[in-house]
Image 1 (tube, rainbow, N blue to C red):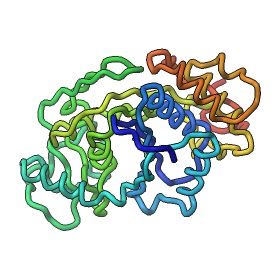
Image 2: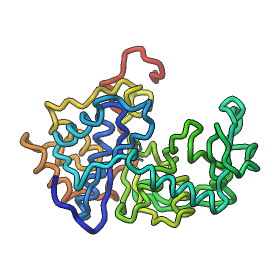
Image 3: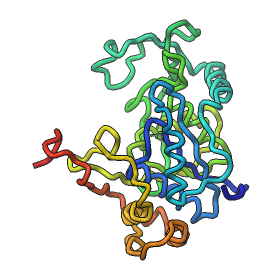
Image 4: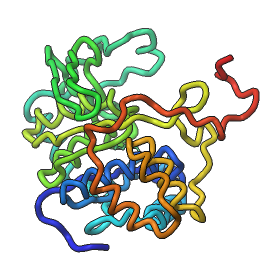
Length: 304
Ligand code: GLU
């Protein structure tokens, strides 16, 4: 891939749970264009901590799909499974600061509670067969999202104490992502709007760990007729790698670059280079785009 740029980077962080579909291409392209438009490096990180969800071959399929669409990354592909030492250090720091407690509450016990009821808060020493939760006191997390605007979240009231180490010993998504995106080399996080609800927890953890908070921009989604995000569950098929320019043109039009979407055929790279010259997160429309072609006739959730 192209040479490293020293000045900071954006990143795309898919989970290797299946091949990319049009919705994931939208997130990848937005983050790629945003980095390139600013002369930054673009990194790829595979969020592979949840081994049971990883699909054999998905990692290769994802990287092949990115390459087929001209989305070339900088530096080595990194995997969260290689970062266990960093996550342990972060957990140790949270524990040393008295922020962790060890929770054995089952899902059924927590059912019906909007936020964690505080049941295990007194268990501040590690104990077997428990999850680690971070204590959330009165904390208002505020950040400016470059597409969605100012975000203000009262974490104690709206989220409550949350899991940073799962009961099965797997580092929770919130902690792993906060540590990796809090790396001083990552300065911009551009990803799907569906992840926005996680961002206050990640910013909170970065603040607890004295990590720099990157700039965030959460892009709109591709949704089906029922308003659900395109995903494997909503029957979005893998990207058709024989039509990379068509795929790119579709996502460019969602990102406010409709004029480019009419370009004549050719390879992806010139299209992306032109898109990067014109791209600005500020010009990305906020609303989701409905795509109905993958909907199954009669599938539940159809709006009449
Ligand atoms: N790996 C997660 C996903 O694919 C999170 C990505 C992110 O934080 O950008 O949904």
